[in-house]
Image (tube, rainbow, N blue to C red; front, side, top):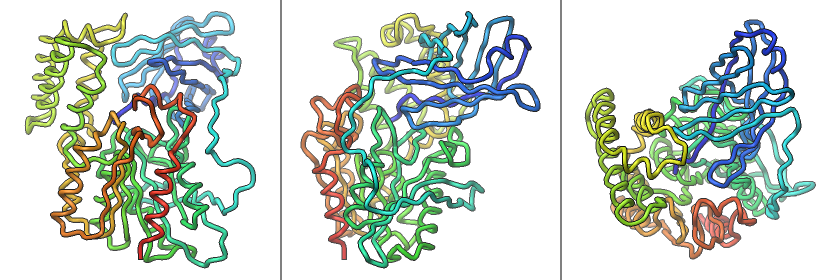
Length: 461
């Protein structure tokens, strides 16, 4: 469920002449596993030195702050310790030639003043021109954590005073309100469809992302649930919303968050779970470890065994420091198999360090031990749970069986659990379901899946 996401930096100056040269906008393209990710660095002089922000347009990330920088002669180093990454480059005329280093991998990233020209991708489902509904920029506050979240509320123009309304909850990783990944704006397309069918939709930037306040990297799934509760309170304040028909639509990790929220308030009337999980996080991680590995034969089995032991340590009751020591010993003893997994040119010591740090992060620690079935067992309101048959990140059969069993145990009589043939984790019609296909597919969201969601919501009494 986790993908590579970048968070960035504040600049400190060691060489004034070089620093003056690096101010302004720098553009580059990072190539990650066959995907091109345009990056934009914005550097300016502040009161206490130099400041910088980072944009990743394809991921919908804008104005992300950098955390530290060193400049010596013509060498620039940007450290992003919160994601275990750094950029190091050398000024050469009007360019900076360097590398992005993360997870032990070193990837070329050259920066220039010229705007990066991407080949335009076709996304025919994205709304164009004048919208047949109202789209309003909104803000609401999570009073518990003292942060303000920003989003968009779309309201039908169908002459009705009140409408059913849903809150869209994104998957793992920092997402903007459109859940924009791989060049697709999944939540924009979903919101457009629902609003055209008479359903108001609130979608918002994750905390610490785009226009929302807060710190994303130190947050767990439970914290994200409080953001959704705040969104529910906001919808209750809107006169266009039918208070009796406020629902939640959660995708991937959002499908874990939705039942947590529903069990903490009486103001949520129904749930739509898209590619949600019904088993503990460590089971999901083990499934992905085996299913997404490109290794074959003995190497694949050896790497799976390594990951299984690593996850067992991570999800144990040991202290963080004890876990760290055991993980380090395991990784040192598994160097040979790890060398076959990491990209060519990767520093294996850096890879081990970053992997352990990621596994011990607050989000991962919570995710590995959390069992979503426990929340589904308490859900009494109507539930629609959809999974794609070609989902390689969340197995449809395993998770649907767990969700169905939990809802049955709750005594819930109003649930539908359905597998949609040929759809991947993003609910696109796919060939293999591989993550590498996501950006190559023109379709953002299968019309079949869109209709399943809207028709089900409108039938709720």
